[in-house]
Image (cartoon, rainbow, N blue to C red; front, side, top):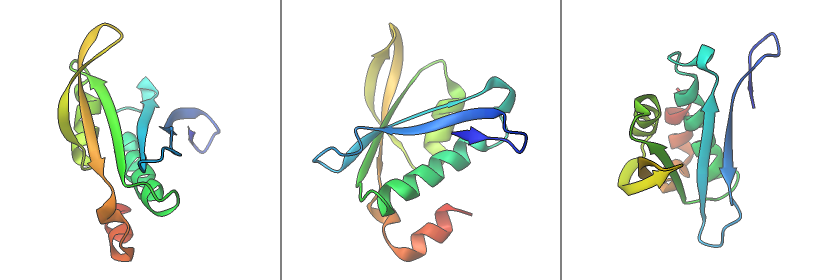
Length: 115
C-alpha cells in the first residue's frame, strides 16, 4: 500500500503467486489518479523488483497493461521490463511484459535500483 504523509492511500503494488515453483510472479499496481505523473509508480515498481529478487528469491516478474495505458507502459519500460507479446485485458488489447531479476541479486545492484 502506498500512503502519503496524511495517511491517504495513493496506490498499491502487489505480487501475485509469488510462491510459484518457477521463481516468477505477476506484478500488479494501481496509482490514484491524483498521484500520477509524479514518479510514484516507477519508484514503487523499482522497489518491489528489488524486494522480489532479494527477499523472495524470485528470478522473473511478469506484468501486463492495455495498449491505451501509456503511463503504465512507460513505468514498465523505465523499470527494466521488456515486451514479450500481445494479450487481451478485460476485452481490450494489451501487451505482456517480463523482467529478469537476476541482475538485482548482486549487493551492488540494490543501490543502483533505489536511486
